[in-house]
Length: 335
Ligand code: TRP
Image (cartoon, rainbow, N blue to C red; front, side, top):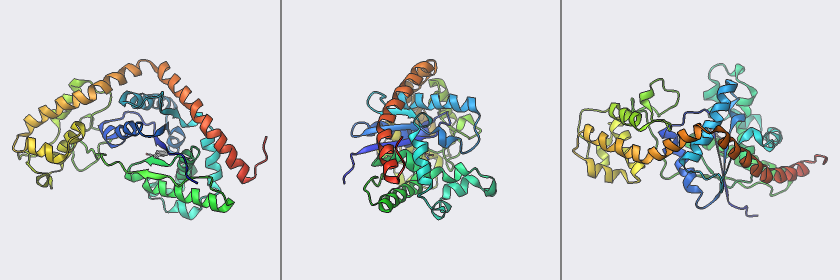
C-alpha cells in the first residue's frame, strides 16, 4: 500500500535558535512546503526527558514556534503545533514501548551520550525517547522526515518499529518513513572556533548569530569572528586545514545560495576584513527580515499561541483516526 506523502519533523523547544539551526534545518523545512504537506512540531514531551525549568520551557516553546514562522513556515498551509497538546503522541508511544525491544534501545548512541557515565540515574523517558519520536512520525503516517545526522539512528528505529508492528499484527498500518537528506544543509561552526558546532550552549555570545539579533549585533559578531592570517584561497581545496576560513566561506555560500567554488573565486586573495564586511552585509540582508519578524512575534505571544492552538486542532484531526485504527488493531475495547 502506498502511503500519501507527508513530511513530519520535530524541534526541541530549547529556545534561542541561531544561524546553525536556520541553515542546517529550518530553511529546508521552509523549502519542503512547496512540494509536501508538512507538519512541524515543538517536542516538549521530548524536552522533559532531561530536567527543565517550567517557566523557561513554556517561553522557549513559544519562542521556537515564533522562529519557525519568522523563518517562513506558513502556518496556514503547514501545521505548526506543540506535541503535548496532541495526546495521540503519548498514547501511541506507550504502544510502541510494547513493540520496541530493550536490545534495540540499548544500541542508541544518543542515549549513551546523553546519559553519560551515570546511566542508572538517567530518566526512563530519556531511554524510551526514540519510541516517542517514532510515535510522532507514525501517528501522522509521515513518509518523509528531514533530520540531521544525529537523528538518523532514531529514524531507523522508527522503521523497525513500523515494520515490527505491521508484521506482528499482519497489517500495512505504518509506512517506512524515509529520511530527507538535506542536500543544501550547512554545518555551521562556532564563530570563535571552527572545530566546534555553533551551539546555543556555548558560553560566548560571539560564537553564534541568534535569530533575534539586531543588525548591529550581527555585524559585530561577524567582525570579531576568529580567522587566520592568510588571505582567502581562490579554490575550495585551499580551505583544508583552515577551519575558520572554511566556516565563514561556507556560511557565505549558504546565505548567498551559491556554491563554495563561486565564493572562493570571487573572494580569493582578499583579506578577511573585506570579506567580513561583505559577509556581514549579506547576513543582515538575509536574516534581517527574519530577525525583525521574530522580534515582532515575541511581542505578540497571544498570536503565536493562537497559531499553535489551531495547529494542534488540525494535527489532532489527522492523528486521532490513525490512533483509533491502531487501537483497534491492538485489540483495545472501544469506548
Ligand atoms: N529528536 C529530534 C531532535 O532532537 C526532534 C524530534 C522529535 C524529531 N520527534 C521527531 C525529529 C520526529 C524528526 C521527527 O532533533
